[in-house]
Length: 271
Ligand code: MG
Ligand code: MG
Image (cartoon, rainbow, N blue to C red; front, side, top):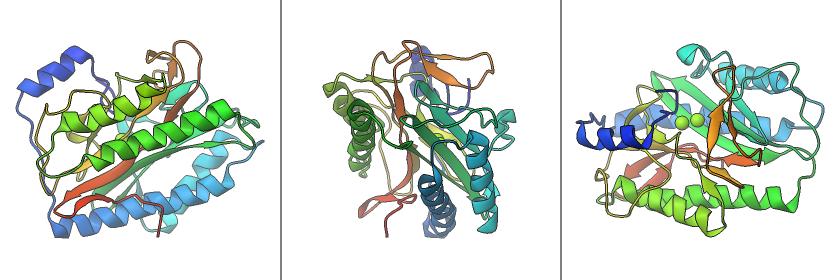
């Protein structure tokens, strides 16, 4: 199993039967989690404004590292299971877990996913966004829009009493209505004192199935949506996942708390 939880469907089934330990967060924990999440959000804002043709992916990684450290936070990804970067940077047909490199130069028309985590007071925040480099095609714009919309369709389901399957079903339905492929091998996750906690949160599923949501759960929902086939493979660097048909892929993620008043998006970049 790999980071983000690379789970086969069989393993996902197994996870339903084994008992999961869910760490519920009270207000004290949420105060720290909001801080970590906002370091991620503010760093994303800086990165999104910086992305431009001619930059290397390592340039972006250095910006992210500086922004996180300047805010007094720790890097969540660097060294995680040996990952070498602060950011996962995945371009075009790369789905997730691209490794920053001085040799990898952004080109006008690319789409680039920036996946980012930070730690404050022992708590993690995790979020991803995909942006265009320079001017991008209408096809690419639509993929980004629909993927971000599908994330929010999932978030809307994060109500006490709903189930994990309600989240995945809403994400899947919205993306597949457009003919897109929803990646199965990587899934979202609980988050808090660890980057990846129970439960796994697939971006697909059936309404009314899976664990019940309750106040105090904090989840990272993170649809990876492909313009073509849902199938992915991991490259020889043992990290970078790409679409098997070479078509574009987008990735959006937020860290969200289930509260009595509905979902609270901790990594929001608004306000
Ligand atoms: Mg992430
Ligand atoms: Mg995540």
